Image (cartoon, rainbow, N blue to C red; front, side, top):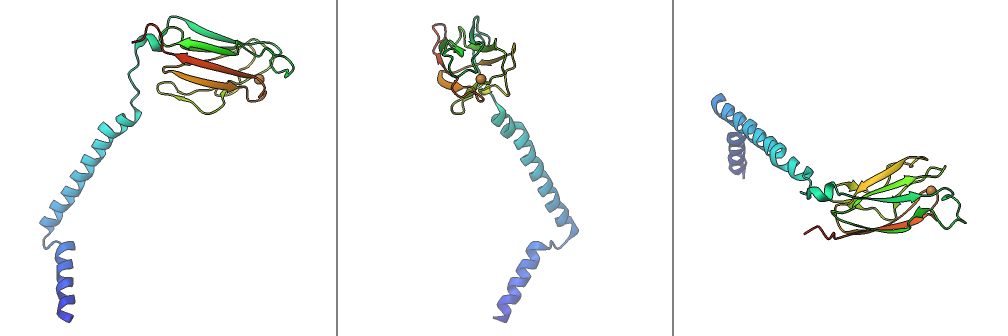
Amino acid sequence: MYSFIRLKTRLANSLSLPSSSHAYGIGLIAVIVGAAIGVSYYQLYFIPELNAKPIIPEKILKPGDTTTIIIVPGAENSAQEQNFTPKTTKAQLGVNNLVVWKNTGETAHTVTPDKPFKDQYSGDFGSPGVIKPGASYQFVFTQEVVVPYHCEPHPWMKGQITIEHGALTS
Ligand SMILES: [Cu+2]
């Protein structure tokens, strides 16, 4: 039993404490090189892969037409039928998939998806804050989707945008 412990101690010593400073230096260089390879792999391949955006045809990124939805005056009044006008809207990829909500009223509103939607290219959909009177919010949809949305301060204001496959898209 005693000799077994001594053997183990000797083994451990020979592994963790190199017998010469030369071997120690080589070990240290190996660790540094290994770390450098790891870091450069992370920077060259891992991070770009994470941040890579899909390649979207130019005609989808910059469609010829815009789809405009007007937030009409009095939209904050729950008794008024018209708020987002038109309430349901269809747009086609590569045709008019740039959608603009224009607030023509005198109250601030939001465009907030009923449940979160993240476009593959444009990211999270929804006005980042309120859309002030006279201001607008725009979003480039790059994929087919149906997004029901509402106004946060006035939840009875409801709309739905449908993005369809475009006639011009392959
Ligand atoms: Cu509102």
